[in-house]
Image (tube, rainbow, N blue to C red):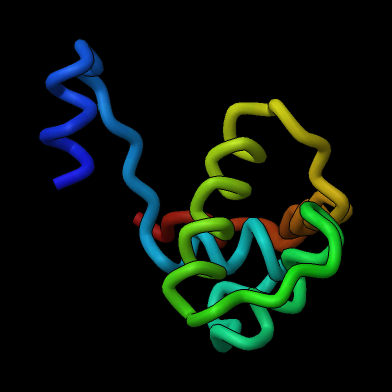
Length: 94
């Protein structure tokens, strides 16, 4: 319904985020539980009491989209780069 409403106002592109991406962006854990996500929202929007999970989920999606767009700062440090392998490849015996 929200897509149809936005379409009516001329918005032709929509961003979609999988739940794991929202959880990872907001709680820094792609498998975070709903209460963990709601708690993590405090660092972005302050200490709010949500009437239900749907409210905190909606705020989390908004925060994740703002983070993705670079509109707000990400409080989590970037992941450490993976070390490159120093093993040599085996030579082909043929």
